[in-house]
Image (tube, rainbow, N blue to C red; front, side):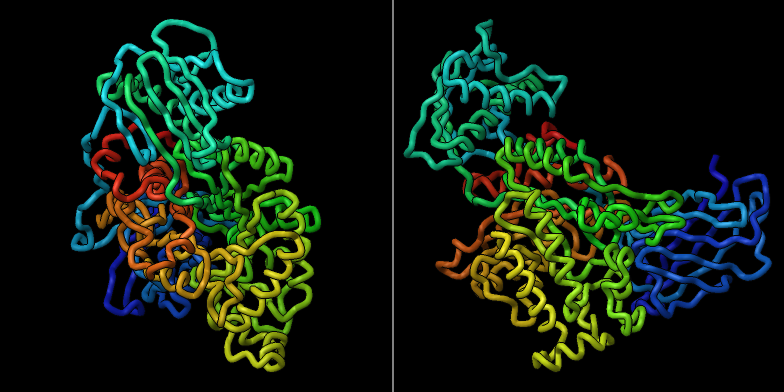
Length: 636
């Protein structure tokens, strides 16, 4: 039974110091509330010097706020206590920027509070919501991403599946694998491939053709026979996936989609890197969800999964050398070393992957032609580490001498301490043993320019090395980490800030350009290999419309499904530099994604828009065709 409800109203001002949030805590229970504090998590944070009205004091760590009322404050049944905070650290743009979870704490314990979404003045709400048009197909085929060349002149409407009774054992096993993929994604649909003759089937003949790219394929349709030509295993699997999509579409919407009866499809991916990033630190997703997401990526012929395993809010990967990382480092909530963040305030929120679970997930990804890029985010975003092992901080550094952009105090590993590198050597050795991919992602993003300025050890390092600022300190750190990875036969991948402070030698380094669209060109011109993932277009957590009620973040503006689909990663690149653009990537950041309903609303169909950007040449893309197919894309 709900005993308390928290309402919050946002009142913006030109100056954030004058911006204000008004709160109302209503007692809907039958007993008075007294001698309490109120705690809540909200991305729209109070500033460090915020002023309170009708409350005594407050404390804040990132999104976690704790408010102490004036002495003697009592809320009787049916009554409301109102207070206000003037002075905000950031602007609110959508309803989910307000309190996500809350509780009142009394001598008797913690009591959950229901949070209504943040309200705002009417003029802040454009009323706009996500819009995906019905679309218009260019032919009766369900295929995503769209192939490079489709030349089909006849269609059949009486077919139900493809027959795989010819071919090698390996080819039949590949067909069974893709059939199982389709069955997992669409358990209410028939399997696309059968292995014994029946009625209404189209037979498949396999043909190896070394003139094709390793990940390319060709399909030739001749009424009762389809020939699948391929060079490598990936191309064979991609061709089978296309056939499975054709079969699924014709079953799910037979009035719209058909089997080809005569013609050809010739296909190969545009980019070698077609990635999706998932943040599991903010909101943990168990192995079943990860396996499901990998299936979804395979259905869209995406081939890289960046697994964001660590951040301020939690460490999610078992490390044998440091077992406490997945105990205290993976927990937040009342009574934990880490306070609640981003929802679920009344419970101990936790989760981590065992190394055996990781091995199972890596094997599953490999079977689907997906490489897993593990991310261990350093030196910043390390609150979970430093709360678990506080001796990794310079003990002479003043607490809260700097704050990250998310509001975490002193959250960066110290580049001047030998203990930092000894820790990372053990971490990366275990990571390399679990993930066979040639790259390890080391983060490198959002390290505050004031980091370490109060650390005597870092100050001595800067003096010894002649570093002018902390950006150069970070570049020094990145160089040492890169050398560490080289010894493990791994290459360094990171966010675009790795290039700051003079950066590191770009040879063999892969950077994700995220802060704005122009960064892709800037990094390529500096000699880096780049994956394009701008927040303005490819961040799945950005709201899809300007309206206040549309869920999502707004720091990078609005990213409508059409904007996401039509964005072109290569726009503006210098002549001859296109080969350094390795591909594109969708980034799923989970601050707002507290449940699967919100996740699916925000991620789809935009995830498949990025999949098509990575696979399909721009001349072959068509927004209305994509929109018409969007209702048939699988979701989590």
